[in-house]
Image (cartoon, rainbow, N blue to C red; front, top):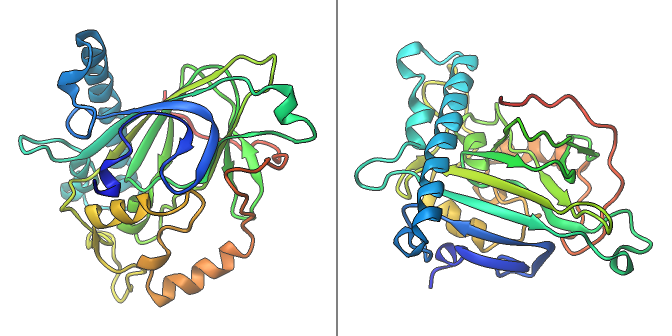
Length: 284
């Protein structure tokens, strides 16, 4: 079985097949594809999954329209990003929903540590992801200087992450941000999160959008298809710089200045204390 086809279904502690682990259990579901077929789900779960996917996809698509507007894309082309996550009769977009459950970590395992990794640091390979969680904290993002900051949970908000593919499509104007989850400790409530990942069709060419490129601007990335990048992503470790092999020399030079400040920690290790929380815009 191809590596890109393996992730669907239930998992516990092991994240992927490359040695990453975390203090969680999860299930990956897709309405349209994958080893967990929609037809095999209980009718009530399938109906809920389809309804939720339709609703949150529209949120992500609207955010992409607003991003295109903010980047100055002409009105007649503002749907260019939105269309990439829109399904069609042939299947279209490659999307999935992930449900993560982080039970409290026993004190014996967390002893002497600032926190136990629930889900290790990583970026999302897709175009966009939309997250919703319960009231238990733990979600953190990495700032450009390598500091980790907590993102306060809000059950009435959706949190949007830029994916690697969107970084390429905007030629680095929007950047995918590393994020992680610290597991709750004994005595805390479990953390539960639901994440929608919006990716394009497997054959979609991923390259800087012509509508965005200024005169004389060079692409920071070589062209690739979503299927090609997805396959490479699932063969990598969580904390790997997945876009590295697809960067052109100009991008590699720019990346070097930022990665020197990055503090990489193993997804199997304890986490460092985060800095103060920044302002994070939420989608209500």
